[in-house]
Image (cartoon, rainbow, N blue to C red):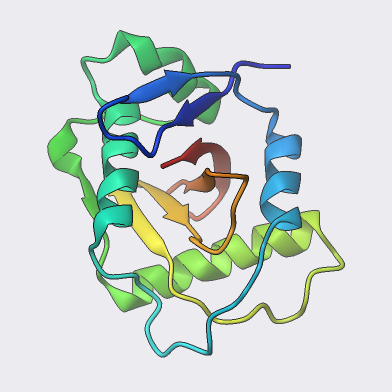
Length: 163
């Protein structure tokens, strides 16, 4: 098994090291743990809150150009090293809708039994340079939640567990 990084909810603990799961296992985790408890939403983006702050912090730590500690994780996930100023919460509804479409496509590709269509839901979308980090807060892996990375063409790059 590859190394996996888990991110603590406790802001005082910072990032806790663990093992990075293989892409297939991580995708299975994402698709197997989705629970949709929200009603149909007109908005695709989640507003800034404590969860978005935690996700943004996690992504900034991985993206940090000065962080040799996370260079291996960035490499495995095909993520660029970018300055913290290029990591920010997305509030544009059309970009969040596209992120949801990409996430739903990934879910259907890896889990043909998933409902078609999936329930509309608001996501956290964090821009990291030209990469988008997407989190569906209803998808859980214990106390963690998958953060899925897509390139600028919305192709899947990988994922990590966060906040």
